[in-house]
Image 1 (cartoon, one colour):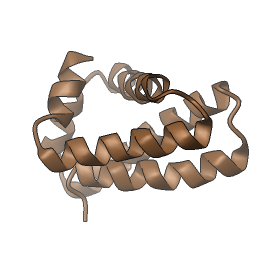
Image 2: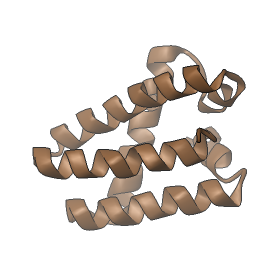
Image 3: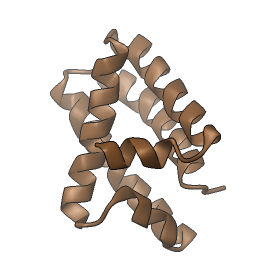
Image 4: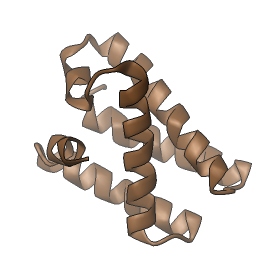
Length: 109
């Protein structure tokens, strides 16, 4: 978790994007910010375990590969939201926010 936090904290734009996502998701899910942050960290950790690499390694890959892996990370977010009984409409809306956030974090235009 410290590696994930330090990766996001490595750039002010990444910090702002992640904080904005947490704020929006907390309002949408009627959850405290800490719960949404935990959901995000869990999704990222699940992806790291599945891939066997760390989040910061993703920036070293080509943009096409980064985009593909972002889709997988977003899939983990979707699973976490379903486990927390979010409605399909809320999930769909929030997956767009999550995608925009991760495109900023991973420098995909």
